[in-house]
Image 1: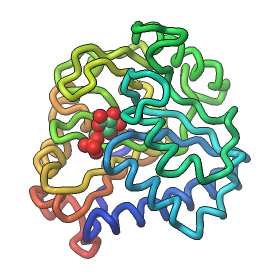
Image 2: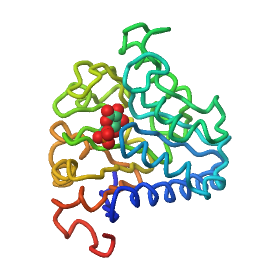
Image 3: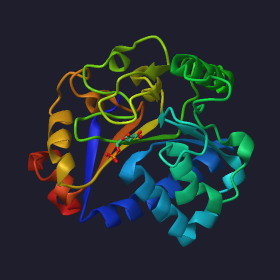
Image 4: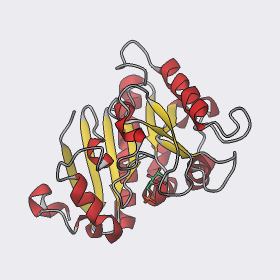
Length: 260
Ligand SMILES: O=C1O[C@H](COP(=O)(O)O)[C@@H](O)[C@H](O)[C@H]1O
């Protein structure tokens, strides 16, 4: 697993634009190297800010959207089309504006329809979809995602893995149903830390002073059960993309001052 690197941008708008530019380059490079790229999307303010910045970037046309697999790190277990679902927000921010191949877009299941209110069954189905996409070159039952994006909550949660909750302790399953989440809605679906750690690169996004405490705690090497963000690492790279407000409690030796 890789050691976290920290990049600090002036403010959240610049952070979103820089992260979007970085993601475009990463997708184009992966498509050149392997034909297809895969990205795991996150919900939340910073994840959607990145997608909106990507939608506005003229360089978005450098991406071959038909050769991009999109997965989700977590989902709020709500009915299809609910405005609070992460996939609904991603469609509004970006996906409705670019020619993605619908067969390569893999939202987590919604409540109702096939799974009713059974988030555990929906999580198992998504685990099956991931396993079916993993090849012999991958590490276990998930594809080796090129980039996995994560927002960081003020309590250090990532995806829907909350401190001290059962999901963050999971070591076998790749996807779990989450019950009684401290942030609404209480029922969710989430990738687990083992699935997150299958990614080549994990990028954690945090902006604003309400995230400063979480960033400082997660980067001070606590246990991942207490601070889930600290356990989110990529095989090749772990990148924390911050704005100055979110970095304010970090010791300066953790990042080069020139990057801020
Ligand atoms: O509920 C969620 O929250 C986290 C963090 O969101 P933020 O708005 O505080 O950045 C997000 O990453 C996750 O996908 C989402 O379901």
